[in-house]
Image (cartoon, rainbow over all chains, first blue to last red; front, side, top):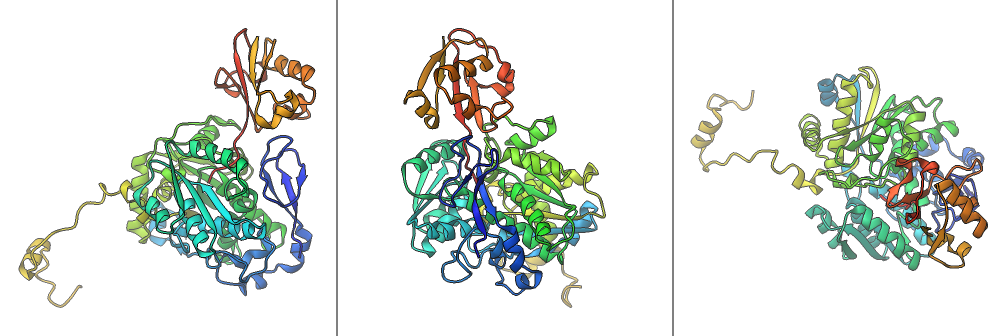
Length: 419
Length: 91
């Protein structure tokens, strides 16, 4: 099946072959994959998907790779993460049907980036690349490094100089070339754009971005399937470049286009940290362009001051009648704690942003009690411990003595075990 | 004179020059001047209705013109204009 027709410029419509290019040479617009939906529609059904592998590759017919599911696939276990019915958090917020899409346990590096990287590296190998690289705020680098190790590719990851310790270690362990750049993510990205022009490497989020970004659609596909082939009323998505939100909206609409769902009535809501909210600020001001900012937030995985897909994220939110909002660092920490203490899920800072904004949208009445709502939790809290270490208290330290324990906790009466 | 910095992808139109000079009192006029001297430039910078393309950023003395007066932003002698394609990339 030749499902990919071409790469097409999102702005001027100029078409290109499906190689490693990402910007329109005419108008500088971003390129994206153009599919042959008529051809895909002939083979894709709910049943076929349900019988596929228990990973995001069950949606391979909607992903930009030429290989079938088999040895050519890099990252065969990524995705199909739990959709958790969040009864406690829902009750706390006043929502009847809230779900957490839990990518804190994505395989192998505990963030949603394993989805995009699985697609990117599979495509990179199809295009004959031997070296992969990326510009990253941390999670992407971890995932590229791990997947490169698993398929014996050379690897360079470029990160800003101020990342959390676990995200730095989470690169080094796989032994890629880890390049720490003096500057913020936008400096790293600009440098990598220049390097990408000089070296024939597969820069996953630059030179092969049209393929890479499509991996995020699988979060939408899984959402629909795991809800019993329903689209949710509301989704809340964290935004850095804005790509994830854009692709979730695209994924929902593709399912409709292919007849896998009857309607899409989902409102797509975007979440940012106040310390780096160029997209949410543009939304609030009613602008369709944004002012690049210098990020200052604990949500480092979202700290992109010059978001490449900001315009399209604004468009997706407008088309779907969703909203955008931003939360403070304190609200982020509160969000992380709230999710952990109600649902037993420890999210990284981006998850705190999502929960914080979810709370705000419910309070503002934009998400209603009866709305079927999905919050995307895209990364694991063990990677951003610095953000909460001073907000979680200390263990109670006692002597190894029953009496001391009982004095400390006043539990003398519970002889028959816990009531 | 206005100094205009030209990005790499547009340098084939300026015979390789990274910086050119022009006389203009507004950004719109500057684009017409550039087109007159370097034919093809306007088509790369502007869409069919004459508006600046979305992924072309224009800065006057380091300020993005979308936060000034857009294409009607006034220019004076000695101003520096940078044309910079948006960087597509990022996580």
